[in-house]
Amino acid sequence: MSLAELICPAGTPAALRTAVDAGADAVYCGFQDATNARNFPGLNFTPEELAEAVVYAHAKGTKVLLALNTYPPAGKVDLWRQAADTGARIGVDAFIVADMGVAEYIARTHPGVRLHLSVQAAASSPEAIRYYCEHFGVKRIVLPRILTIPEIRAIRKEIPCEIETFIFGNHGLMVEGRCSLTNYLTGQSTNMDGVCSPASDVEYTRHADGSMSSQLAGFTIDCFGPEEKAGYPTICKGRYTAPHRSEGYYAFEEPVSLNLSRLLPELIDAGVHAFKIEGRQRSKSYVRGVVSAFRRAVDDIREGRPADIADLIALTEGQKQTQGAFETKKWR
Amino acid sequence: MATSSDISHRPSWRNGGVVSRLACATVQPLLSRVVRRIAARHTSLFARLGPHQGTDYLIDPVELPFALHLRPDPKNLLFRAVPRDAMPRGGAVIRGRFLLLLELIDSEEDGDAAFFSRDLEVTGDTEAVVRLRNALDDMDGSIADETAEMFGPPGRAVLARLRRSYGNS
Image 1 (cartoon, chains in turn cyan, purple):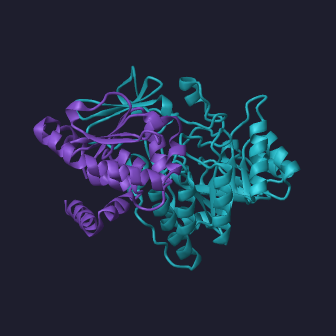
Image 2 (tube, rainbow over the protein chains, first blue to last red; image 1 turned 120 degrees about the vertical axis):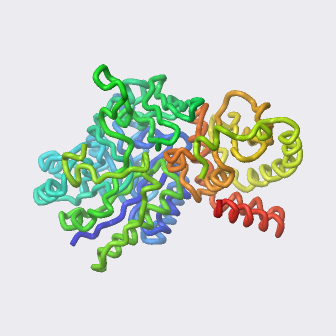
C-alpha cells in the first residue's frame, strides 16, 4: 500500500497553520508574484512569511512544497530563479515546477531539494514523465485530471517516480499549462501571469428579477436564475448560447467540483502516493473542513476501517460534485 | 440562510428614512471604537489590501436598517453606518445576512461557498472584494469575539444571543 500523503492548499500563513493543525502531511503554497498559478490579489506569501510558515510546519512534522509552476516569459526567468533560491534558503521540502528551464535550474543549483512536476506540465504519458525524471531528477508527478484509475495504474508501472492525484476541488478540464482562454479575453495569461479569470476583469451584475450574471472582460460567462446555484466566472465553465442552443448550455464543463472521497481505496491500490486537495484561493474555513474530512478518511483506510466520508457538497462549486474521468471518460 | 429573494424584498424602513438614520446615529460610536481596535491589533491586514486601502466598501447586512461603509485606509480609517438611500456610489458592495457576514470575517464560513449558494452577493469592484477577503482570512482569532469582548459580559451576551437567534432561524 502507498503512503497516501495528504497534500493541502494554503493561500495565506493563517491557512497554512490551519492545514497543518487539521492534519496535512504536506502543504503547498506560493509567493506573491507570477511564479505560481494562484497569483490572486491579496493571496500568497512574502519570503518572511514563508520562512515562519516552514518553521511552524516542520515543528509539527508537516512538509512545505513551494509552487513555482508557471512558465517564465522570454527574458524574465530571473524572477523564477530568485524564487527558487529563496525557497531553498528558507528550507522548503520540494519545488512544484512546470517549466523545463526552471526544473533544470533547480536540479543544477539546488540538487538537494526534491522536484515535483506540476499538473501545469500536462505530462500524462509514461514517455513524458520518464523524460522529466531522467533529465531533472523529478521525484513526483501530479497527474492531469483526465485519466481513469486503470490508466493511472498502467502509468505507475512504467515510471520511476511517485504519483500525486487531485482528489477534491476545482475540476478544470482544459489541458493545463496550455489553456489560453483567459489570455484570449483579458490579455493576462494563466500560465505565465498565474491568473485564471483575474478578479480585476470580473464583474457580477444583480438583476431586478433576482438573477445574477457574471462577466469576464465584458463578456457574459453565465446568468444564474434567482434560485440557481452559482459557479466561478471561468470561461471553461461558462454557459453559452448558439444558433442551435438558444436556451444556453455548458459548452465545456458545468460548475462542478471534483470529489474522489469514495475512490480513495482504489487510488491507493492503483499506486497513487499522494492525494492533492485544490483550493489555495479558498478560506481557512474550507481548508479546515476539507483537510480534516480527508484526514479522517485516509486514516480510516490506513487502519483498514471503512472510510468516514464527510459531506462536503456545501463547499463545492455550483454545489455539485463529480468523480469525472477517474470514474469514466464518459462523465460528460 | 437568506435567499436572493430575501435580499431583494426588504421593507422600505430598512432602506432609509427616520428609523434608519436613528439607528445609524446609535451605532456609530461603537463602530468607530471597534474599527480602531481591530486595525491596531491586526496591522498586517493592510499590507494584503495593497492598492485597495482607499477603496470604498459597502457592506450590506440585508436585515439591518442600515449598511456599513468601510474605507480601510490606515492613515484615515473610515467605518460608518449609512442609510441605504445615502450609500456612496462606486467601490465594492458585499451583501448578505448579518451573521453570515460576521462568520465570513471570522472564517467560520467559506466565502466562495456562500457565493455559490447565492447567500452572498458581490457587485462592483471584484478585485477589491477578493483582496479584502484574503486579508481578513489571514487574521487569527475572531473579530466577533474580540468585538464582544470590548464590551465585557453584556457584549458577550449579545453575541451569544445573536448566534442563537440565527441558529434557530
